[in-house]
Amino acid sequence: MDFLSKYFKEVITSIELLEKYSTDYSYISPIISSMRKLPKAVIKIKSEEDVKKVIELMNEYHFPVIVRGKGTNTLGATIPIKENTVILDVTSLKGFEKSKGYLLAYSGTEFNELGINDLPVIPTSFYMATIGGFVEGGSLGFGSLKNGAVWDNVTEAEVYTLKGKYTLTGNEVYSIAQSAGTTGILTRIKFRLVKNRKGVEIEKQKFNSLSEAINFSLKVIDYAEFISIRNYPMAKEIEPGENWGKWNVIYGIESDKGFQLKDIITTFAGAYFTVVNKTGLYYNSLDISLDELEKIDTQDCYISAELSKSSIKYFSHTYFIGCNKLPNVGKMFNLHSYKINDRVEERRLKYIINFKRKVDAEDLFNSGKLDF
Ligand SMILES: Cc1cc2nc3c(=O)[nH]c(=O)nc-3n(C[C@H](O)[C@H](O)[C@H](O)COP(=O)(O)OP(=O)(O)OC[C@H]3O[C@@H](n4cnc5c(N)ncnc54)[C@H](O)[C@@H]3O)c2cc1C
Image (cartoon, rainbow, N blue to C red):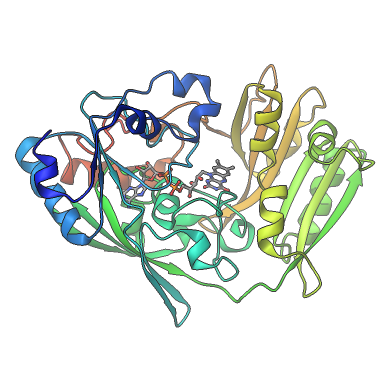
């Protein structure tokens, strides 16, 4: 791999830095983090010319590659599991403009640079993540209840693959959204914008039963910015000072007088990460239809149900922490598997697999992360 420094200004090979690039926020999962390997080298991608050059070299030398934003994903999406992997750090591929209800951004642009108040969906990790990493690796976030998931808001994506450059539009963007960099290098994204949110007021309602909490949530679902339903242990762990009920609805309403978005996203939507970090307990997640949500009723472990919307359908993205057994309901969003097959729903997975077969049959992009 010595030849890489002939073509790129910055190639990292020091063991200390390679160690850093071999991990991501999946360190919280002992199962995933035990599988990581040291990469061979890291290339700092500075321009679209660098992107074209990498593709050329991959076609000639057939080496595996992982594209990396800020490495904040929690699912091992940027850890190498194959020897001789080269990491492409795209965080210098920056720049954006906002006009006529759309954002056009280079993939390495950070949310901190974009400003978040007019983004339809924002990850809890917005203070450290890139937009490209969110499109390729993320799913839901603050705003998902009103505006849907990441894939509902990307209207165009430009991606460099081993078989050439593609500009994907309409349903074709499913080929790369949540694909974890398994098909190519995403360079530019067109993303919907929404009206600037001024602030969000937080309301809390306490109930003796889960069904009461769900019924109340359904009454505010059309105008709330977010809704979290938490059982007593979860609510207490996050906010010990409050006198919580058995089941609690914490929701946000847009208001001039409310909190700034940036001040509440981490407190409210990031509850699961906070509790896992604090307790070290085993965790997982189920996507459950609202009709079946009553089946999760227990106080034996920590539960947080984040109500969301994807492809115009409401559901609950539900976190279970320290539970002996998951309820037999919904679809698993496996938080301990690096395979995207274990989290992407069937309909969109088909787009990713078809695109992968077409552009990377050799499995050089994020090798081993997609069964296709
Ligand atoms: C505290 C915390 C809270 C979080 N909250 C949320 C949340 O609310 N919603 C959510 O969806 N996620 C969340 N995440 C996960 C993660 O932070 C987000 O998905 C984030 O947007 C990833 O951005 P990143 O720049 O760190 O990407 P990375 O972690 O670097 O990459 C993510 C994936 O995208 C691929 N990738 C990155 N850039 C490119 C590119 N240019 N071309 C091709 N592939 C690329 C990578 O290969 C990888 O597979 C959270 C994580 C933490 C630690």
